Image (cartoon, rainbow, N blue to C red):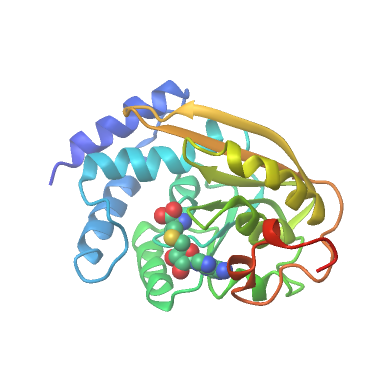
Length: 248
Ligand code: SAH
């Protein structure tokens, strides 16, 4: 197993953002990689199977918000639809002072996440099995987080409906996107307003150690989300807000 190469690529990439790993973080990334690759043989966790690509497309991609100062220590962060723990786990490794809630609808994936967290000895990370549409209406989760993040959860309106209800007024939702996001920004602005937010910043950047382009859409929550959002499970995707007529 090419642990050293994987770590080297990760470290070179992080260097571009001024981030340096300590020994414990390096060890945690190595263990995480071994566990991900091992469990991935038995269940479908990720299509990315080479350690070098895991370093770039999972780890560097996940921690990109740190390059833009979007996540401070002591914050409460929710990762909605975390899958195999992205972007939440790499962020938790780099920001042990923040607390993370990883939300995932598939039971097998939350089983994996609980096992891997015990293996990594990560404290300050909570794994919750459930759907965003339900959890975001529970008082212990609704408008309780400084930051909500989501990667590969769907179009921007789906992402915003499933993240903004978790965010406190004054906090942010961060949508991880690929290179082509312009088409989504037009309706994103309207949908954000409907949910109590506004698009504050769109960061476009090259992913280090690759020729990939990425976008982070930062939405600031300015007013409480109306209680009818998120709509019931499945609706954000089936009847996306961008397609709803006014008053519907
Ligand atoms: N964020 C991860 C996984 C993306 S795939 C990554 O970028 O690698 C989307 C994941 O979100 C799946 O694991 C799916 O089970 C979960 N998911 C989709 N809709 C969800 C919802 N409404 N609530 C909670 N989890 C959801």
